[in-house]
Image 1: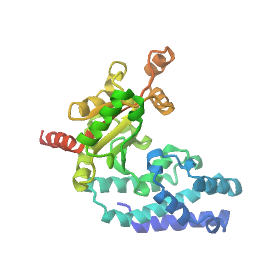
Image 2: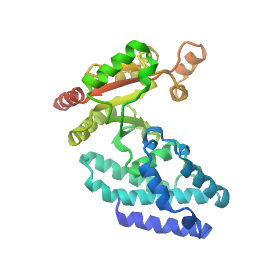
Image 3: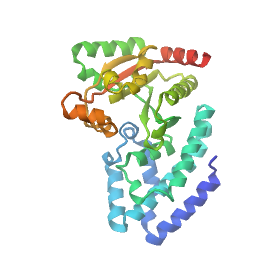
Image 4: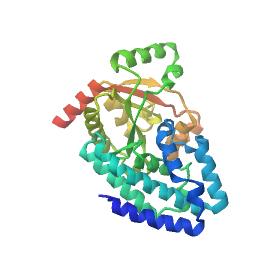
Length: 308
């Protein structure tokens, strides 16, 4: 378990390193401004793109240009330390299962260990892995195990205008009458840090942890997910990914088309020669789909899962 003493020691060490480069860095770029901007910006958890926040982008670029890449890396490590220190206190007031509390501490340990392992360019606002570290350490996202982290957010809007008129009304009907509202839902992101645990067994454990979260937070209306790997056409191309869509659809989730994006194409082709070949031949276009898994049906599924 990470302790405030450990974090405090790291904090002092990083401040000394930063002061050795420039004693005025922290006074010119107060950490409190950085921390409060992350905590208060509603779009960050959904987008994981800090460069959309002008205030942060401007600070990053000024530190980098005036003091160097190494100084920026130390500054951002220091910010992570401050987030962890604050979150250790806040976690005790959160409605979280013990397993997830443990996963938070595990993530904090990884982040602190990385300070001496990761290169300076890891600490960059356009690096997805670093962005996820920030979102976890600031409690904007939730580690749920396996290859995934979760966040609480509103339902996606893309299915409204990517599936035609019939889907528009079907999606709206399902949201209102089956899931009972647009927000809040739990959704998941894939984390590169733990990608080796991307498998069916771990996904089933994640379902159980998400169910425990839902029980402690009655306002959550269900589980929402959007990804290229929810495309039904993948059943023939990449059958090993079938569990990601079959399990939800067999247990009360409803699937909707959500269109193709540059990110869908990028991630779908990243690790599969077969998908890359079919894409080049014009036989496959990575396309996003989304499902809504209403709270009632999701909890019923997980209770059955636990009873086996």
